[in-house]
Amino acid sequence: AQSVAQPEDQVNVAEGNPLTVKCTYSVSGNPYLFWYVQYPNRGLQFLLKYITGDNLVKGSYGFEAEFNKSQTSFHLKKPSALVSDSALYFCAVRDEDDYKLSFGAGTTVTVRA
Amino acid sequence: DAGITQSPRHKVTETGTPVTLRCHQTENHRYMYWYRQDPGHGLRLIHYSYGVKDTDKGEVSDGYSVSRSKTEDFLLTLESATSSQTSVYFCAIGGAGNSGNTIYFGEGSWLTVV
Image (cartoon, rainbow over all chains, first blue to last red; front, side, top):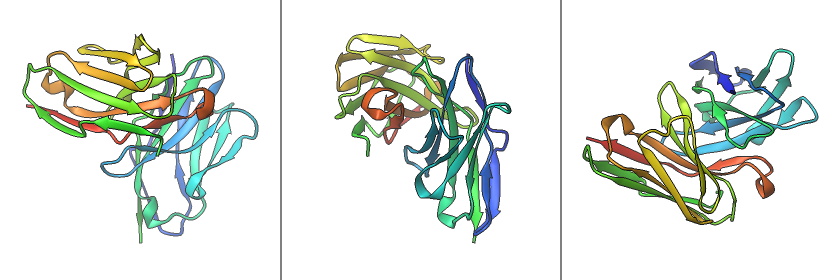
């Protein structure tokens, strides 16, 4: 079985400050990890993924995430948040031998001007 | 955009009626998925397909059926809609091959069962 935990329902930051959205996962084999963002009344947009290689992955819109195998974490980060980053963020995991993604419950990010 | 079209985008239906949601892709992906999104639950997999006429259940498949007669179309049917099936439904494609392991989502279908 595979699962994802996003421990924070909401994250509030001021524009220009660093943004971190936390994610921990559980999977039986090697993990493939993903972050998606959802704006109101829209579908999910892919941000970035970790499959193998460098533990720090960079994605769209200045976001990055660090894979930490010992802590089973894949936290999403942005050095300087923008008001336009306000959205719902989902972490997802799958086993390398499976094609089905499992999602966390989501974290709502609000960036205040 | 990932070449995924969902229809209808919005629907209101009565309890006990059948409802079919359609997902059409132009990317020729082998794998297609139906998820539902509910507050506090994230996205949960309903059914998925790994080829024409090849489908399997996800974690919340009760009350739903699917069919895939062509590579490009994946249909989700609620045989007899219930209020608990009021949700946002997302079709997705990918997970292997030319998607580079990434799954891409459609824009969603908002279903209200009254």
